[in-house]
Length: 75
Image (cartoon, rainbow, N blue to C red; front, side, top):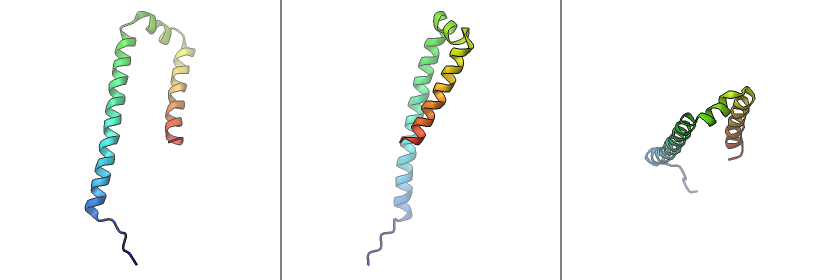
């Protein structure tokens, strides 16, 4: 019978590589968010669209939650 246990060093290596990927994606997402926020903040027209009507603001909020839910449940 073969022993298929993974050593502690191998486990740490796999977890470390996974966490590096996670933080890389998070960094990229924050960078994109910052670029979009700067673009929207510099445009009077976009600011009036987003904050001029509460329904648009709420739709963006709901859309954001839907995208997050989709990425969590449908990997």
